[in-house]
Length: 332
Image (cartoon, rainbow, N blue to C red; front, side, top):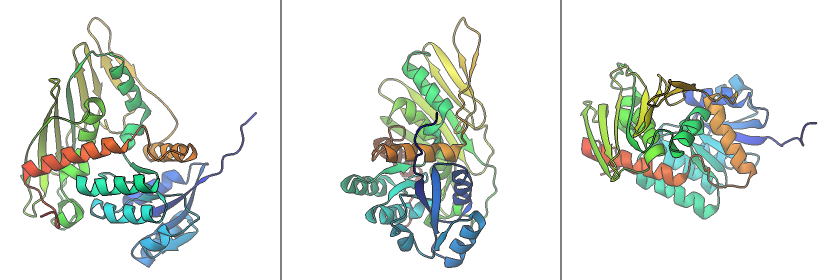
């Protein structure tokens, strides 16, 4: 016998770009979700998006979307330079928010959003789908249970080949361009999931003529003696793999570590173990499912993607940008 029918969580989508379209595609396949409205600064863009996905309401402004009382939660998919303004507007209007990664341009903006959400008692979560992935969750369980001993090193990379023209968003300082925020957030988040916030951050890289990083390496250090060697690029197609090495073994992720289907556990004296975890969901659906679970439970933060962890990642990204010499408009 099936349980009682659960009322669908009602979603709004803020922005109409490629990521918003991918999210909408996945969300519309979830029986316990209902997409009520889409909002854009351009009315014609919102209308086209609504027609494409069969969304009932199209708003030519963020304010109208945020003010819609038939919406429970809003997914913010703007360029990250607009995350602070868009997410803040939605929180002020009383909506729960799922905000794309990177959470904001810097930790100051991130802290403002977290403070606002906590003061208003509203749910807020960064859309870090990696943390919601069942394979990654299984890996963290094994690591925390001591399957590979004490973690000594994390290696991870994420690079795209480009080339991207000067007017592309990835090279536009006004849009928070650069490899670090767009791609490096994944390796950094992966390392900090296991080791927490680093005690030391070093960064080297090459900047574009516009002043954003295009090829970056990070060395993170912890007082425990653990290290992480991470890289990101918008000039090279890197392996996109990850490895976690401990005193009693290691875990290796194949290409696509940020939304993996499997990993291999290596331990001395044993055959390699391939480990998978299946939940029947795709990456966007996993983060949406976690949001809906939390809302139904009355939670204002997700234990899988805690806000303090998001702030810690933003501090690391800020420190890395300081060492690289990357400054965005309005940061001084």
